[in-house]
Length: 340
Ligand code: SF4
Image (cartoon, protein in one colour):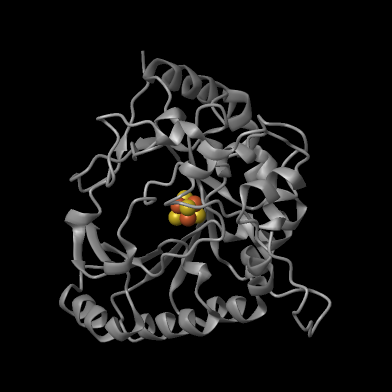
């Protein structure tokens, strides 16, 4: 773990950038922090070679110590399972490459475009469907603003811009302001949707300046947080989401169904209730995208159907996320029917 010994603190509360500098990047450091020990970590390190460990201290604090099976730990710890290969698991399982219309701009769905704003994330989720994505050639840089603007002018049917990544909130507030200013000039754009894990894994990212940017835009703002387990939603996360709710941001959640982590109906029912306490509505429950190295997180179909039926029986409709999967080349997500 890289400690911030030399940082001159200007306030008692470290900035989110300072918190990122003290994130765990070494498997040994994380395991030591969690009071876990293993003689030989060589295969864990091999698994982390191209997609390294990255975990914020805030997130690591929510992992139960001395528990190899903790559902938050399993989301971030590189394991030898990732070294296995399966022909159904691909580097680009959702066909992002085919939907690129400009570097970093995907036009896959009617009326919406998706902007890959950055490769950076605050944590590395081992199941990430973009873990193999070639970000260096396919991120939207500031120098491309005019090209993006022109594309949107030429496509007035696009009414929603989705900011994705990486994690779009890893950009500075100044860069986000620049993007919001660009969209402000385009009347057909009605909504800005931000897909981000930062309110959950690095709540301090929701700065006053960021709240100010959101408050001042004329567009509707939707933030889709990515929480997979109720243990992720501590009181700090709840307070952060309340700040967003108070400025009328629509808060939604999408989860990925992950074997060994949240593949129990009771866990997902609890997650839905906890999300509602945190002012957030469950939106999607995603079946795992079949990305290389993530096959150990996959669940059999029958188990998925049984689990979802149990959720249906135990949740009011407004707390039941839609069960979906993404099929490469399709112009929409596929709703999965579970009726017998
Ligand atoms: S935060 Fe999102 S983009 Fe980043 S590693 Fe996790 S799932 Fe992937």
